[in-house]
Amino acid sequence: MKKEARIDSLTLSIVQVTPSTRWAFVEMVDDQNRTGFGEATLAGHDGDLLRVASELFAAVVNTRLKETGTMFATLRLETLARAAVVSALSHATMDLLGQARNCSAAALLGEIVRESVPMYANINRRTRSRAPADFAQSARVATAAGFSAVKIAPFDDVALYGAHTNYDKKLIDAALDRIAAVRDIVGRSVEVMVDCHWRLNVAVAREVLASNVCDGLYWLECPIPESPDNLQDLRALRSFANSRGIRLAGCEQAVRTDGFRPFVKAGAYDVMMPDIKYVGGMGEMLEVARLLDSHGVEFSPHNPSGPVAHAASLQICALVPNFRRLEMQFNETRYFDAIANMKLPLPQNGKTRVSSAPGLGIEVNRTELDSLTIRRLIFNREHEKCNATVA
Image: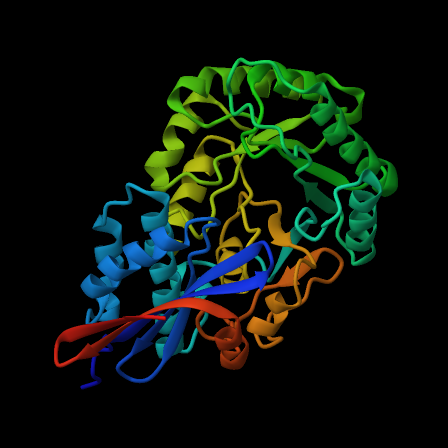
């Protein structure tokens, strides 16, 4: 009788890939010496991730792989850091289970409906200089690479976050200039998405939506904070946006299906953007997709981070009928491909092939990962006990 695999060790590695960008990876090794990876990147919360991992790794190590799904589904995810670590553990588990059964994570989770995934390029973080001309240049490079949709986050230094206070009109005008530069360079045949990162209030969001610059924009994302008090304001903004030929998008940090239900019920968004790093697991991501499909909401995963989250997102998108495009960080750092050992399928004409290799289909370059790691937490199973070390 074949021995049931157990989790032998768990590692969280925080890696520095640009002066302003860090990614967080979970490494899971089973007692048959197979290794699975997950991603828990959460900007500005390295300490929270390490604290949560220290607690959860102790509970998860030595668990049978086939029992982890039930465990993860019952864990409380009261903070985004906790959701990120549990989500990463789910990715790593599916990676290992796929390796054990010699099939892709997608094949384990359901019926594959597509072999390649349409993408859009997030060009924001590659644009180090924030001049409109530099945004336009980034958009030019992305479209030359075959992308027919791009996203920017142009509202630098705007910090209203829903508050009814005076604002600096120059900052809004600067954002509109960046949007205009991108739209002028790519033309109307390329879809342009604009991410607000919750920085606006209702009045300013309406002003932005009403501007000629945004006429027919593909979507406006996360204009105001996603609090229960703002649900009706979001619904009203969506209605106004739609009257201008613009979709409203959001919910990138919602956790589990319960996190999406209030926004679905309120009719807050045309497009919802669950993130594989925060939603609570790969199975949970599919439950969210089913919820959105049942209410006619477009499923378009948030995916601006590292290569492991990208690989896991591709596996999910291969399964979801009500899907149009997946986000991809574009050309921010060479380490995206280097950490993945140059094994991730490259986008061609705006689409990426879904790997059919076992698990997530990613091969992590240990040398690159170790050279970039700035903090690390390790739990090892040893005679039913765990030893933790922090580097």
